[in-house]
Image (cartoon, rainbow, N blue to C red; front, side, top):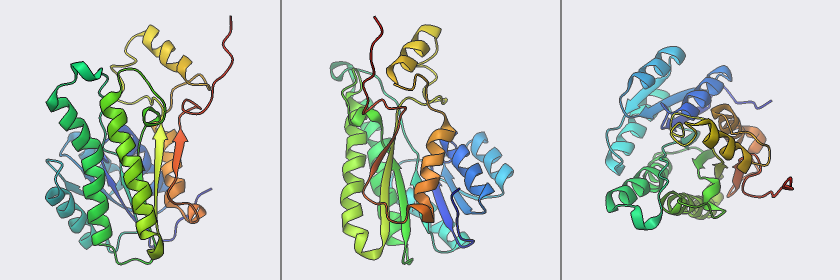
Length: 251
């Protein structure tokens, strides 16, 4: 069981996502103070109402907007001890069919947001210890067809996190990444919309099921907790074995 001190204050960027909601509820049950950051939406308002957490809005992926949200919540909550970026997209297209707009959007939402969030949280932290968690994908490790843009963006997130973990280790800051496989969320609904595509997606994962938001949120919660205070610079697969295992094929 993970534990947190009463003084823990965690920011979640992309809080209105399925995984963001699952993580917010887990941290709420653990007694952690949380600041929610997302675009304005009914989902964000419901989450704020359910948990009583403070919230801040962003309308675009820029340093100015993200930094303003971080500053606003730090003023309300106090010094930040943890931060998680859950913003993401899922573009499944081969390179020759990917438009410039799709490429830029994929990089902005996945990689730019991680850099701006890292910069803002680090610049506004006065804590002796700080834990940051970013989200990658199994596609950044293994070659999956039609994942060129998202694989490139998530590989960038992993490189960013490792370098930052080395830079700020002397301050006691921990920076890690979780890399899910395919997770059942609103974002992936189009990929698994038919029974055939769902079964094919499940078969890709050695554990023969897709992930849930709670699977990913549980790993993130552990990385934020004191139980993981000697873990930094790591990419932890939460993917049913997708990126690392090859099981026997029945013939």
